[in-house]
Image 1: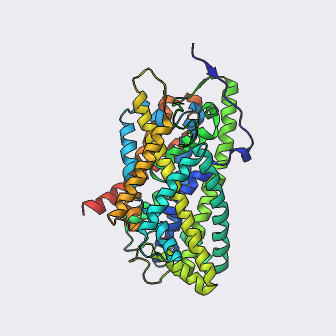
Image 2 (image 1 turned 45 degrees about the vertical axis):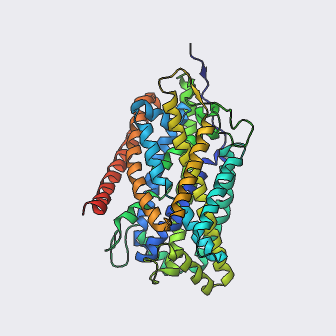
Image 3 (image 1 turned 135 degrees about the vertical axis):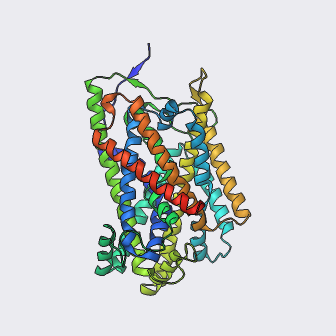
Amino acid sequence: MTETKSFPKPPILKKLIGPSFIILALGLGSGEVILWPYLVANYGLGIAWGALLGITFQYFINMEIERYALVKGESVFVGIAKVWSGAVYWFIISTFIGFGLPGIIAASAKVLGVVLGIEDFKWLAIGLLVVIGLVLSAGKTVYGMMEKITKTILLLGVPFIFILALSLSTGVDWGALAGGLVGRGEGFNFLPAGIALATFLGAFAYAGAGGNLNLTQSIYIKEKGYGMGKYSQKIAGLFGKIGAEQKVKLTGEKFVLDEESKKNFRAWWKVVSLEHLLIFWFVGLLSMCLLMLLSYATVYGVGGNNIEGINFVINEGGVIAGMVSPLLGTIFLIVVGIMLFQTQLGIMDSTSRIMAENLAIRQVEGKQKKTVNLSRIYFIFLWAQITFGIILFLFNVYEPKTLIVLGAVINAVAMFVHTALVFIANHKILPKEFRPRWWRKIIMVGIFLFLGFFSSVVVWDKFFR
């Protein structure tokens, strides 16, 4: 007879905060800090509606991903593999291709290189990649290390940007932002003439985490101990005593399907929905709006924003230095550089988790053993990505914006695919009492169709016209 566990009761909201910070931070260096401000620097605030719609879509996507992990106490990848065995290969390949391109760390190195006076920033980027590997390898548990770093950087960086944006913007700028959130631009509605659809789709996909990164929400809440994840194990650090010998059980625990379990799930759903709404959706949208507003108030219409990749960020620092003080302009660039570094750190962690989890699923598939050395597989993928990034830099493939946009388009397509897979897994595997309500189903189908249409248009525009 299979042993069952009790479905735990949720703690207070304060004790649940953590996973949403990490998933939010994954988008800070791609969508929030680079792509949306880049678009605003060139086209104005009339495109801000895309950021609002994108992060709202991702809120609903993430909650369906959380639903599975709450109930099953395992990652959503385990569930998806039950409905499509080939998914493990898709997730490994699409994740490595989509995020193996080290555009964000290249952007971090370029910005910090300006501050440090380093012109050939690829060597700084290589050094930062090695630092990321050492940081992720050093913690007692990888999740614990990530949560501490992410919270610290966000709680320092976001207020700084908030104060800066308030200080440098005018009432006219805020009016333009308000209009942009409903699609009213300067001489256009929704999309301006000449905008690169690939860049816009990339920004839309990165209005939050984006691509397969959304799926790691199920791993993070499992390791945080949400719902049935209370009984799961954590990935140990590489240098810890158990790092080389820890065996992790991939599948979750079963619980008795009674009224008490249903009541506890509903209580969990209420509190995690609020936590994700406040941290991921609200803080994420506020961060994007402030960074877009700052870009508009400082460098909108300034020459060189489009041609020179992410030079608009460096232009922003120069304008801030002229408007306020050189020291503040330098601090701005340092904060941006650190936020970009933190994003690459989070992406390396998330992508390594995704690929390790899926390879581990493949290893135990059809075998009697139920546990696998997930820590070892995780660190192999982590250092493989770092090595790949270093090789690209050594061959002078390091223009930040090009790498970020290419990766973003790939990840928009990946998000289209996993939205459908999560929807199917929840309906085939979860008990009826824990499945989404009808209105959530309609929203998810609408998101799937929107992403499919937009991705098709961009792929056609980029490769077949």
